[in-house]
Length: 380
Image (cartoon, one colour):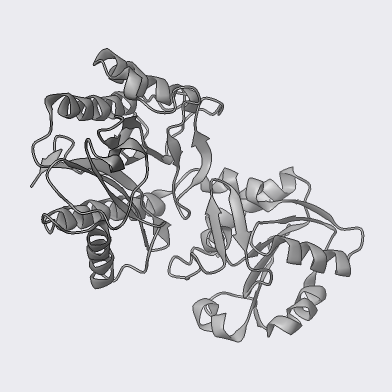
């Protein structure tokens, strides 16, 4: 167990008058134990913008008591992953309930999302008057701010992603399909020992002034030809943490108004980063900084999500973490937060443009962890 994270959790348990908390295999489990090589992504839980789904019965369970004692219940196949921890109890799934019953104290518990309903049913069976609170909401306070180790991993993941895209772009050739482009990316990840993507990756082909350029959809059978916009949305899971990256590149010589549009989008992103003042800048201001520069350059009509001010999300163990970036969120940015800003332009019957960077809030401002060349737009 990570001692610093445990102490912070205990402080929250005390504040919320809770007797303990339960965390099944998933992001909070990984965070508290600092077990970055434990594989759970896409197996037990999928969380996109707070909508979670999970298997019903956990293969590993962490129970933290308010006095600081904690217990790990694991099935035999998980034991090798967690045998270095203290108070590890090995049970088959059918016997895990017996183990919990022997150590359970109190009646007010936080339970997180993976296997939530199963655990609620178990606790109610053991303690009929049990009171359950939201373990996800509790943990957001801890996971929102990254420590030095987490920042280092996220920075390394951003560099890895930049390198992956650079390699893939250099393999592009006319006539290849979107399937083939995405297969190249997958093969690169496998060759580099990367265990998974953060989400279903997209290298979307959209050739201007064709039927395919009239809607914001991508067909994997499309081929790369002169005049194609290539919209990337890519992320990898490495060392237990995610990356998320986006750009649009243009295959061939782009019309001047598209080149200037891309420059405006990149400039809007940079303007937003440069305006961040830790402890002062509110999340709900961020979209406005992008909008301001894009409008100044004459491309406001193409900017997407102006009403909601939707710009992106925090990132860490999960790709989409809270707080989200939009006009309705009232939260002051603080050092140690890492978020993904992904402004977009849509040119009907032309191409779809996106820029996405992982951005770290520092003590003095903010900086992009993604370092892909902002001036690079045309390729061939």
